[in-house]
Image 1 (cartoon, rainbow, N blue to C red):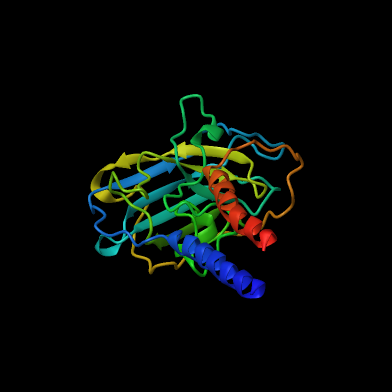
Image 2: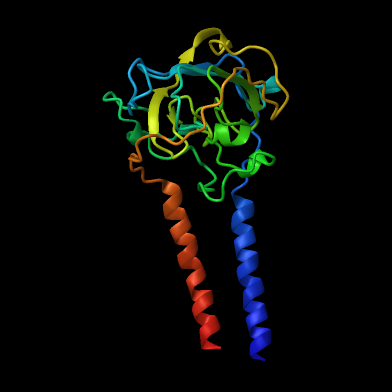
Length: 250
């Protein structure tokens, strides 16, 4: 009798977890306006300086509507990358960079489906990743210079949509998540996305460049960042607690 109850409760808990996981998958965005485009360009000075970085990482992310208004086509260009601390990552973040340039104030990754950062993004299933985790979905930065162009079906150029990023920012990170630099997206005219051009199949990346900085940073200090995803994960753990308690009572 007790065994049957345990099996029933286990099945119930498993179905709940599966339902939560399924709800985190991003949906394809349609109707992106062809006349809108955005670009974010890193500033001259870094937020987090390192001994091997002369000035700041140089680069930008340009974005325009994808084919037939589906998703967004991104052009990514970076150079003058630190010689250690890679592979480097970059993400769309929830808030814009404030006037003081504090990258921690951009808060967490853009994550309208409340997926959270764990488990790590599976690039073979980009719809299951955080919407803002561009490097997780389409490749980390492993060369200097680095360039990539790709089409992401899950981001939006339409205000009012959760995956809209035109009023947000992106952050450039060390592999240990320390924030090196950040920049706000600004609108550009003509829908040309600054340097964005051409049409790329969904999920296809066209990287260029040589070199592969992969060592760990000389400094182990990191910038503390409180992510909204951590709160969500805690809520999930509390939700599972009654099931565990009930098992011990049987």
